[in-house]
View 1 (spheres, rainbow, N blue to C red):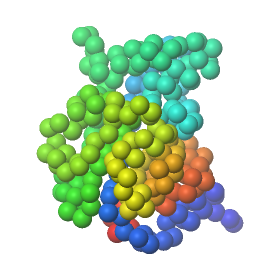
View 2: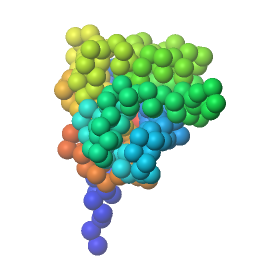
View 3: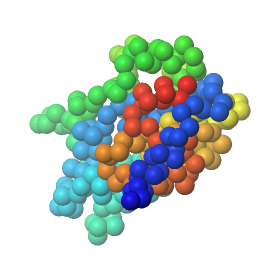
Length: 245
């Protein structure tokens, strides 16, 4: 019996267990890569859609929308999604509604309190001893600072580019190019979990690996799309990067 498409995609991307050329520069996305956002950004998005439309949306639906180019920005995604459901909502209206769930209110704690890091300080320090470490995230500077300001290993991030630091957001490559600063893109490796991350890397000419566990929502479609965008591998978790060095 032939393998399911998702398994075939995963196998073809993981058949090589070493990179042909070891990178000098690592660029990480944050959400879904370094931080578990199931109960923070994703839950806040679903709650916002429910508030604005009355619809009990699913994670599969969320990722179908999040995989559309330009929807790495949760506020843009919600605006597009809710509007498609027949409730016209502007970007600013979507952001205001989302913030109540993510940051919380006087009456209710925010989902941000449920954030969990997906790697240990020792792991980041190990990578920092071998590579230049950078972040290019769709978070705001405030969101980045909340999570990392008191995490000592964050000192190893040479550059941190947030959505506030570039004029054009993902899927444009501006953040990747800002980090590279005219250096050879082939000396870098970008790791992200969203289609916009892959598109940013492709536009910048930087090799890309996707973080995508086999049990993640809409796995098959996302895996196939990452293959179309020339992802070098599908990694179930960020620490699986070690297998490639």
